[in-house]
Image 1 (spheres, one colour):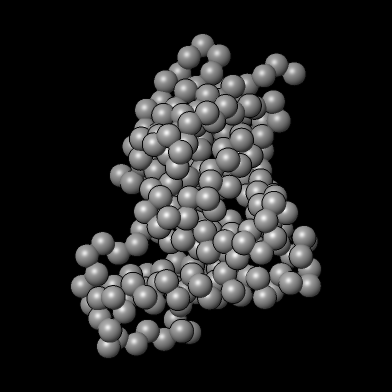
Image 2 (cartoon, rainbow, N blue to C red):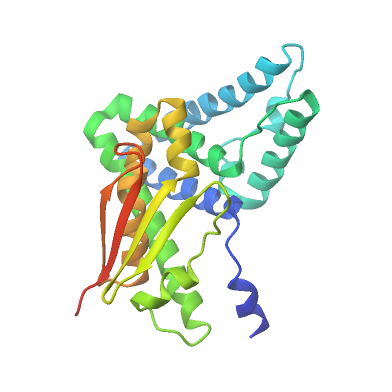
Length: 248
């Protein structure tokens, strides 16, 4: 029972980042088995290059060791993600970076770089591949949310979804939740992921995550769950959701 209580704490963003990369990588390898490694390496290299450029912008003389940054292997291990991220932030603080990247921003940048490589090369097939990776990632998270609820004797019903959600919310998210009789309505006016993609000009890649993630998590939680996502921060300036549980 004690272990179950520990599991009800928010899942770390290091774990979520590693899981996202793992699922996206798997989708890419399944769709493009011969090209997958080169695609992934190119995406990660571009991601790392951007992190280095941030450091170089503040201190052109500071040399950051490539081995201390991210790699294909490190991005699949939540402990390595945490260690690498904290080391990178320590460097940022040392050289006086005013606003170091949050772990949310880092995940957004990682996703955008890898997605860009795949989509720019393979177009619609590339988009579908990335979406499939996000879908399986979301399904896994939703199944875990259902287990979190079950661990305290709760069913995977509408009212138990958000109360047992896996990802914690920081001040980087601003939202309103309204419980109606047969649905939950949420409006996000601030999202760390969406705002990062918007700031970076990578919204065309980030939107592939936005379009898939919440419906996929909901389906993993309960196959009868439906999510209406009719407004996006990357399009309309806010995200609007209706979470509905259909009868079997």
